[in-house]
Image (cartoon, rainbow, N blue to C red; front, side, top):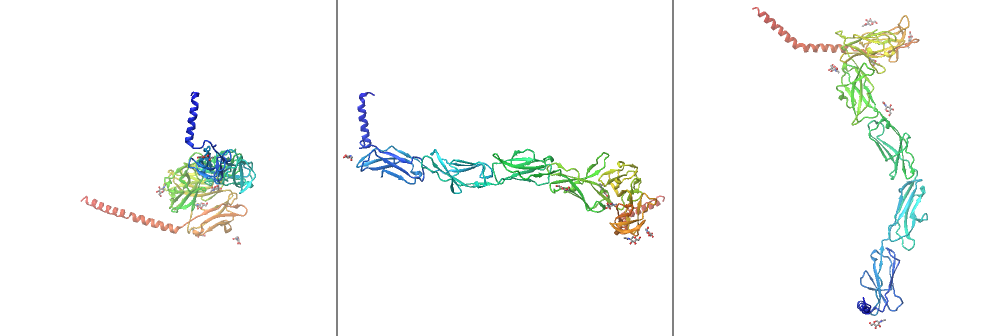
Length: 608
Ligand SMILES: *[C@@H]1O[C@H](CO)[C@@H](O)[C@H](O)[C@H]1NC(C)=O
Ligand SMILES: *[C@@H]1O[C@H](CO)[C@@H](O)[C@H](O)[C@H]1NC(C)=O
Ligand SMILES: *[C@@H]1O[C@H](CO)[C@@H](O)[C@H](O)[C@H]1NC(C)=O
Ligand SMILES: *[C@@H]1O[C@H](CO)[C@@H](O)[C@H](O)[C@H]1NC(C)=O
Ligand SMILES: *[C@@H]1O[C@H](CO)[C@@H](O)[C@H](O)[C@H]1NC(C)=O
Ligand SMILES: CC(=O)N[C@H]1CO[C@H](CO)[C@@H](O)[C@@H]1O
């Protein structure tokens, strides 16, 4: 632009400004000031002042907000409790007569919601004596750069801190309380709301509780869950230790899905947060039993043919979740015996193998085992339980020589199996008091020749039940044999028939006359004293019982069970048997007779 053009331009500008603002060019524009400065918090009061350079009387002031129309007001405008809607751009000017000043520079007034601080507690609202706890007051508002923090404890101001964060390095129960805070501007008058109260609870040293599910007994293959419980408290890690071994940090819940025996032991746990450890829980012993099957017999193991009997297989302390299998023990020439699954094993699936009417061939030695459902974990075989079934006419008889139940030690004993056809297919077996099933050829000093078993020199370990076994494995005619050093009772091997005489003697090996003058006892009561022989004439069922004899110097014999077999009912049965057989044979007899008759008649006719 050329210099000569400048006056022209100035004139132009003066004209423009005159046109725009009327008669103002002579009056200075006011200055608008605001106290306090923005941002102003809601509820505070704010003062706007429209100032002219010098005090000119008679001016009135016009205020406008956000370019709205002017409204005449005083030089000073105070909004005592500002709302957010009071925020905006303010300007003012002055008027006298018809003359106006220029507008002031606009001033933005910012109103902020008064901030509400928030108190946080670390690590938790619930802490334990000795923990390190930090309280923090946060005021979220960008407008204020520097706050002073004011803390309340249980509603009253507390001088414990003016800082934003306060740390109790080792809390005690007395630090429990409701905490709140508010902020005041360090260089200014603004202040925040009061925060909500936050409760800090300080308890005594905690001790977790260790629980185990399921409670004992736990079997191998089961799943076990251990839980270290600490009353609804968060932010902890858990330390587990077993048998006082080193700890390892793990979750609150520890699950062992298929326990092994080696998982058994004493567990304890504690919790850790920051550098702080709780007490240890009470130790809990987790016992893994190998599951053990226990076999028992009800009502008794000595049965008479036709009696009912139940073999009961139980798992110690555990009634559900098992499937049972049943076996008979069979002798094998090796050191241990074999077990043969019963063909009707499933009959005892619920743990009870019931025979409603025992057969002679149920005699045998039984075991059971159980499988933990769905785990394929089997118990070892149970203890053995024998069943002895006696009957009137077994297919074979075990003949003992000498013929008595009790025998001296260091003597020879012969046992023969005798059947009607004098066959050789029988061997002698025994089941001793120690629960061992043995074959005659494996007895100490024993040998089997044909159907006869000979024990060359007896010992008390030969005491047991002896019977005959067929080639196909059926067991018949079990008999009690007791071998004893010193005094023995002479009593019959086989049951005494009702009405017969029962003779008992008391024998002693080391005297010239073996019959002792002794006292005789039945079921523990003295029945006869100082006799060499005791005869009970015409025995009846009431004479059944355990008998023994006792000599004052030589000692007493073992007890033997003497059973009495009813003669009456047996003969009745046999009469019935014969009768029914005869009746069954009747049609054949008639047919035969008719045929013979016809045959004879035909023969008679032929020569004709
Ligand atoms: C069952 O187990 C407990 C141990 O838990 C033991 O004391 C008890 O003798 C066992 N009973 C049988 C019958 O095995
Ligand atoms: C036992 O004997 C009965 C007949 O008395 C027979 O039916 C059954 O099969 C026999 N059982 C065994 C295991 O030999
Ligand atoms: C064998 O002895 C037991 C008692 O130990 C008895 O209950 C049983 O009846 C006896 N058996 C015979 C066949 O005498
Ligand atoms: C039983 O003994 C008496 C003598 O005490 C004798 O007269 C009787 O014949 C005997 N009975 C039998 C069946 O042996
Ligand atoms: C034992 O026998 C004598 C006679 O030898 C008799 O006087 C006494 O009462 C008997 N004692 C008992 C307890 O039977
Ligand atoms: C100070 C004052 O009032 N000044 C002028 C305002 O305007 C009128 C005309 O409109 C003048 O006469 C005054 O002198």
